[in-house]
Image 1 (cartoon, rainbow, N blue to C red):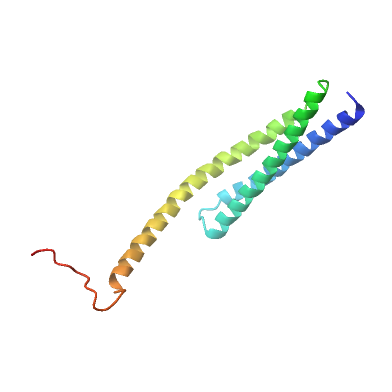
Image 2 (image 1 turned 90 degrees about the horizontal axis):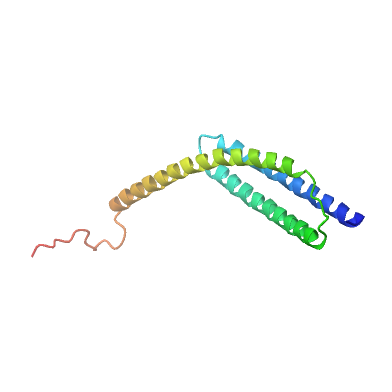
Amino acid sequence: MSKDKGDSIQQLLKERLDLFREIQAVSAWQLEICQHDEADDPLIEKMLELITERQTLMEGIDLINERISHLQETDSSVNTGDGWSEEQQIAVVINSNDEICLTWLRNKSKEVVGMIQKNRANRAAADAYQMEGPADLAWFVDKKK
C-alpha cells in the first residue's frame, strides 16, 4: 500500500468518524426536543430541520463509504483500522435516542390527529350556524311527497 493511499484512507476514516459524531450531536438535540410534553409548531419545525440535517450527514457517510470501498477495490492491502468500534459505540447511542424520539413522535402524532379532528368538528359546527351562501337558499329540504 502506498503512503498516499494510507493517508487518504485514514483521512476518510477520520471524516467518517467526525460525521458520526455530528449525527450523535443532532440525535442529542432531537432527544432534547422529545423531552417536551407539548408538541407545538416550533418544536415540530425544529425536529424536521434536525431530520433534514441528519439525512445530509448520513449521505456524507455514504459517500465516504463509497470512496473507501473504491480504495479497497484498487488496493487489497488497504486497512480500515479499528476506528469502527468507536463508530459502533456512537451508533448504539444514536439508536437509543432514536427509539425514545420515535415513541414520542408516535404519541404526538396521535395527539395531533386528535387536535385536527376536534378542530374539524368545531369548524363544522360553526359552519352549520353560519348561514353561508345566498339568503334565499333553503337549508332544509323535505323529501316527503
